[in-house]
Length: 380
Image 1 (cartoon, rainbow, N blue to C red):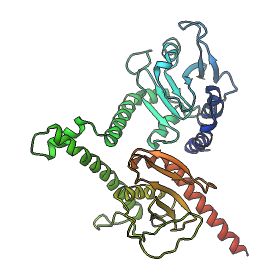
Image 2 (image 1 turned 60 degrees about the vertical axis):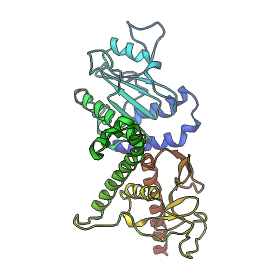
Image 3 (image 1 turned 45 degrees about the horizontal axis):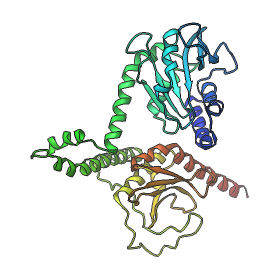
Image 4 (image 1 turned 180 degrees about the vertical axis):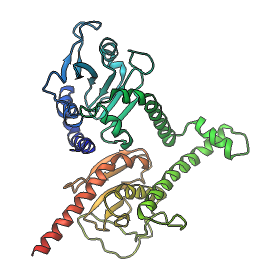
C-alpha cells in the first residue's frame, strides 16, 4: 500500500470510529497503534522496534512512562505520548516528554490524540525538546505538502538527518500558515491596519478599522476563490487570455430530498444564491476535479440549503451547504451509503477544505456505482 493511501485509510477509521472511542487506551488500540504499524511500518509486536510503556533508566520520575518508544538500529529514535481522541493537545499535560527527551537518544517526540499529531525535535537547544512542534498534521485535514515529511519517520524511509535539517523551516512555515488562517477567519486590528495603511488615505482610527474589518475578510475570501478558479481553469486546459465565468451556470431550482425527483418549473424568485454559496460551490468543484471533470459538479439552491450534486442528479448528493444562518453555519456530507448525511459545523466557507477527502470519496463511490450499472447493462 502506498504511504498516502495508508494515511487515507487510517483517516477513514478516525472519521468512522472517533465518536465511539471514549478512553485513552481505546485511542491507542484503535488509532495510534495502526498509525505506528500501518502508516509508519513498524512492528508493534516486536520489542526491538516498538516498546510500549517505555521506562528510561535514569533522569525521570519513579513510575513515569512514555506510551511508545520506536527503535531503529538498536537506539530509541522516536518517543510517542498519547491522549484520548478529541482531547486538546498541550505540553502542560505531557511534561514527561520533555524529561524523556533529555535522557534518551531520541531526537523526535510526538504528542498525539490519534487524530492530530504534533512532532517535536531539539532545534532550539541540543537534547532539549522544543516547546513548539515543527510539524502538525491532522488526519481529517491532511496537508499534502507534509506527507513526504511524515514518510521520513517511517521504517522504510527513516531519514533522521533530513527531518532535523528541515525542521526549523517546517516549524515556521506551519506557524505562519496557521497565523494567516486565523487572520483570514477573524482579522485582528493589526492585520486590518496593515491594509488600511496601503489603501486608505485617511487616518486609521478605530472607527475606520471597524469599517474595514468586513472588507478585509471579504477580500481575503474572494482572493481564495480566485485561486480556486485559477486551478479549475488549469485543470480544464483553458487559455489564460480568455475571461471565463467564475461558476458553471445551472438553473436554480428547489430540492425536496435527494431521493425525490425535482420538478423543473423555473427558478423561485424567493431563492437567492449568495456569494458565500457560490464560493462554497467553487471550493467543492475544485476538490472534486481530482476525480471527475468539473462540469459534472453542479449546484441546486433552495430556501433551506444549497445542494451540490454530481451530474445534476439529485440521487447523487455530494454535499449540502447550510450557510444562511445568522449564527450557525454547517455542511452535510454524504459518505457512501449514508442517505441522511452527516452534519459538520463550520466557521467559514473555507472550512469546507477540511472535508476534501470525504467529498472525493463520495464522488468516487457514485462513479464506481455508475460504472457497475453500465457494465451490467452491457453484459445483458
